[in-house]
Image (tube, rainbow, N blue to C red; front, side):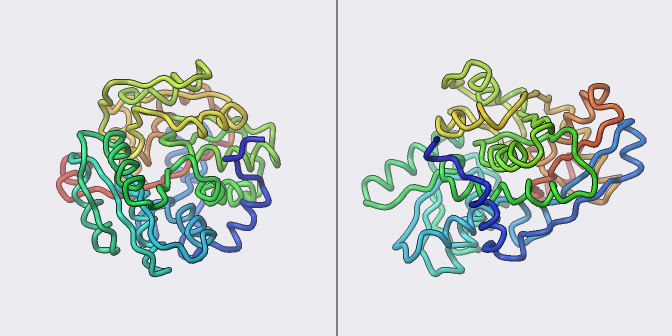
Length: 316
């Protein structure tokens, strides 16, 4: 068994352990959207919590499982770092977060407000990750990697546990794919309790490394990423996440930034929900590939809403 893979027992335990502020999020169908898509779509809104994303589930569970840690180091495009900062502050554990020099300023500000020491390094997330790993090694501190830690994946899997309680069986899941914790957590739960459900990952067209690596069954990196979806802008996949995805994922789709932007506008107008690009790609796939899902019951998480005022004015 993959040592980095959580099991359903861990996911169920996580659901009993995680701060209630992150759990049992709204999951509902929007009739106006169903009419547009010619399908039934369950939206699971993961933005109504103190860090505006699903990341609080996995980070809260991870930190609580570590006992009396001295300090942690991680890297983040912003949302994972906020989750770690929130959980570490609750446990009085110092945290250093490495982020790219191009990172979303709102996310940087929020991480600092939550008590993290934020260090900027490199031109993108993966360069910041390298700097964070080096810093952790030099200082003898544990480095926490999103997508690798089984507790983080188990925490994300609680979304799958909640979706599986929907009164009707879900036929297809459309899950954003960044470092892989979200899709691996949800996929682990559904493969055990609803194996007939298709688990489909969604990446940004300008960040295809996770898709290419999954298709080939081996690590494939790209020199750059070119997408507004910073939260899933992965250039160097996490090997442990890729290994697990071979058993949790049925297919991966790509969507363009243009399709993602159109989706963000539409869901804002229809549901009054602000969703950041990385959190909207699952819904964008439902829009772009809609004919494939006609008549099905489909579910997707809206998994982040950290946009700056300038981004909201420009994109929404």
